[in-house]
Each structure stands twice: as C-alpha cells, then as structure tokens.
Length: 314
Image (cartoon, rainbow, N blue to C red; front, side, top):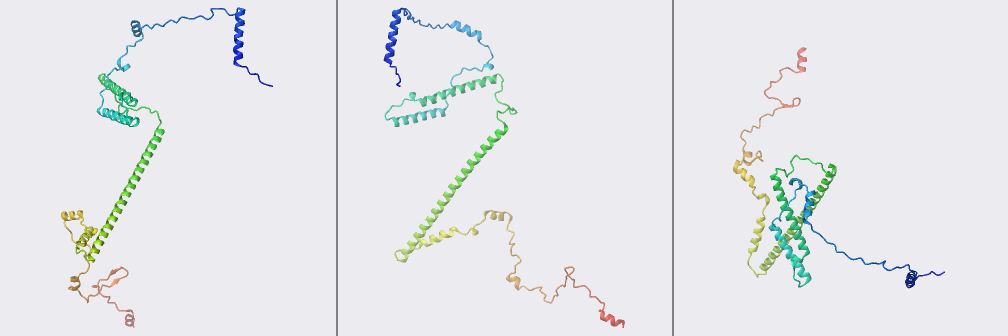
C-alpha cells in the first residue's frame, strides 16, 4: 500500500478553480476588500493643561519629607584627574600597539567614556551629599548615629560568630603562610651568606698557598701576606675576651667588690705561715648521744670502781 502525497502545485490549481467556480456562482462580490486611508496622528503639547494637571496632584510637602536636590557637579579631585590621564595614555598605547598606525581618539573609546561617566555620577552624588548635609544641619537634624544606638541585626549572633570565626581562621592562615614564607626567605639568605663566606675563605686560602708557593720557589720574598692572615685570625678573637659593656658600667658606677670565688683556698703565704699552730692541743671528745663535743673542763667522776667498792665492804 503506497502513501498518497499531495503536491503544492495541485493545491494551487484546486484553489484557483474553486475561486473561479465561486465567482461564477456569484458568491464573490466586488468591494469586499477596501483600502483604508491613513490618518496621521497629531501630537499636541498643551503646556497650560499639563501645568494645571500637575498642580492638581502635586503634594506640597516640606523639604525634609522629599529630600530632593538639584546641584551641579562637584570639582574633580587631582588624583582622579591624574588617574584618568594615565588611563587615557595606557589605552592609547594599547590601541597603537595592537592596531598599528591608527590615530587614537579618546572621545570614541568606550572604556574611557565609561570611566568618565561613572566619575560624573560619583561627583554629582558627592555634591548632593554635601549640600544635603548642610541643609540638615541648618534644620538641626542629626546626621550621625548616636553611640548608644542599638539596632536589630538582620543576622543572628550565632551566624555572626561563625562569620567572625571564619574570618579569624583566614587571617591566621594568611599570617602563618606569611611567616613560613619569611622563614624560608631568611633560611635562603643565611644559607647564601654561609656559602659566600666559605667561598671567600677558600679563595683566601688558595691565594695564600699560591703566594707561599712563589716564596718557596724563590720567585718572591714578600711575606707580608702571612702577617695579614695572622691579623685576620686575631681579629676574630675569643668571645670570652670581649668586654661586657654592662658589667663595665656597673663596675664604674658601684665599684669592684673584689674577688669572691676561691677566697678560702690556701696560698703559698698561708701554707708557710704556722703561727698559732699547736700540735699538742687535744681534740674535743665527741658525745654520740647528744652528737656534741664534750667540754674538756668537765671534772672527772671521783667515785671508785665496782671492784674497789666490793673490797671495801669486806
């Protein structure tokens, strides 16, 4: 079974035939399609009626209720003028370098024009703010929030605490990163200085050995380089031999109290001096009960012993 396809040419012929049949039967009458004349619309600018209508719905409110201002543009700041000049020069350089020999017109630059437009809006708003604050002060209306003013916040305290913690964490991370970077830089610098010092020492040593070799071969008799090297080594010095300025100032102010450490040690004079030495002096007996030395001037016990007392009883 084949599908039937209707051609466009057949439909056009059928429509024409239908129109002819309708015209022959009298169904189509002339005058159904008429041309309409175009009437031009007239715009009337009736200023008097417009002003009268404006007075009808105009609200005569005080200025504090409307705060409407008509001001001129504030003067251009010197730093902004310099910035605009630098931007124009930079745009000119970019245009000439990218597009070849093309004359740059600042008035046709959309970027520069956008910057100027935003600057004009800013200056207009600045002039309005200055004039508005002046009028508010004349009306004795405060323009600043008092110190004891408390307003309900749009965010809860918990949310603000989370925000504060997040900001503190970011600041701490940045500070830690900066500190690590500084330590890394310091480490690099110290390592570089250490390497330079070692290279310099190696170069000095090599130069000294070369001069010493020349002296050994008899090509030179100058030995001043040895004294110079000795002077360099002596300049390093011992840190123990350095003068403590703080200690010196205190000694100058309060005086030097003398040597304290090792004051009881024997010397040659004290060893040979034997005045007052008595070798026959008896040592004091020690009492182990009281843990004290017994005095020598104590009288002896006159009581006889046990055997003598027994013999006396017989």
